[in-house]
Each structure stands twice: as structure tokens, then as C-alpha cells.
Image 1 (cartoon, helix red, strand yellow):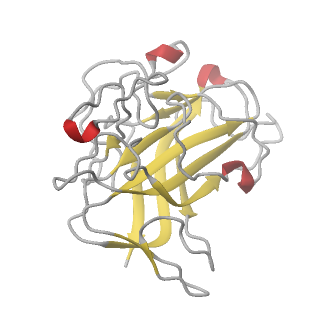
Image 2 (cartoon, helix red, strand yellow):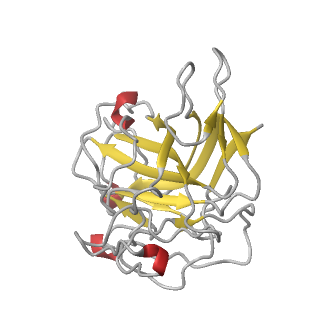
Length: 259
């Protein structure tokens, strides 16, 4: 599964992928098509990234500013980074997530069940805005995304009964550079890291079917559901972190291993 899908055609403010645009703006009648103000995750592209034809790089969070960025998505921190894995705990779904602090992608509805082994790999370009020095804990979480209706729509992830359910997550925390006291790149840099999102001896908390042994947890996402992928950051300083994708110049990819 690859990030992202069809490249955008222009700069734009932060899109709502995890929360309503503003409080009480999201309709609860999404099954009737009344979805104004509701969050919709960004659709992933299942095809591998390519280097051609060239595609432009746009700003995806103009509401947070464009000064000091090369384009892409700026994320605000959700708290202070302590540089430990527990920085990224608490990936369970909540309706209080803020769009400028989290971004979520989602696959197409599965045409057959998929059994995830719990191993994954992410490659994405990132850096701190304004070349600021900071320590970052980069957090990822996988979700089972129930589809709405017989056509497996995904139009309102806040409606009760169709909210994302956490499968598991992981933290990426690079070592601090002693010469700078930071751990995150200050210029666009490709960050690639393997991660494990299913813990041993722990049943996934999702609605997917789990088959957990002492050494090999697994999670089967049912047919018709989708797999969601959310990112957020903890940062040691009041610094925005930029993520670049949706362009052939900065290819990004998410790999999830399955049985």
C-alpha cells in the first residue's frame, strides 16, 4: 500500500482527515449523503511510486503557513517529546483528534480478508519547519476502518458504529545528535524505518479477527473494511514538522506485511 493517491492540483489548507472542521459541523446523517464538515481520510494509491512524469509539489496546510517550507503537510505537535516509545501510546480512536495535529490515510475497501502479521515499513520525506532544531517522536497507528453501507463507502468516520478501531501502533525516535541536541532533519530528508505494530501476547483491540500466539500475533481485517494509517508527532520545541508526499520528486510508501 502506497502513500498517496491522485496528486492534488493546487495548494490548500489542512483537510479534515480525523476530525470535524469545527465543533458540531459534521452531519450525523452520513449514510444519507449529508457529510458537510465531516472528516474523510486521504485515499492511498495501491501502485508503487514512480519517478515520472514529474508532478508538482503543493502546500497542504496553508492555514499553518508556507514560510520556510518546500511544500507538503505541516503538523503541529500533540505534546512534548520525551524520546521514549510511550510518547506514542494512546493510539485508540477518539472524536477529539485535531486535523492540524494528525493526518490519516486509508486503503480502498478490501476485496478479500487480509491477515496482517504486525510488521510494516514506512518511507517518507520530512524535516522541521524553518530548519529548527528539535527532537521528535514520530507516531504511527494502524486502524480497522469499517465501511458504511453495502457499497463500502467511507464518508464519515465519526458516526457511531463506523469509527476507526485501533489495531496497533509504533514509535520512531532517532538518536539525538550531540552536536545539535536534535534528532530530526532540518532539510527535506527521506526517513525509512521498519516498525512492529502488533505486540506479542496482546490481542489487537480492533474488530478484526485476531489469532495471537506467544510468538506470532496476527490480525485479519474483514472483507469490505479498510486499513487506516494515522501519523502524529511529539516535539521537544514549539516547532512544526513537515511531511512531503504526493509528488514524484519525493516518493512515499507504506508497506504492511500480510500472510
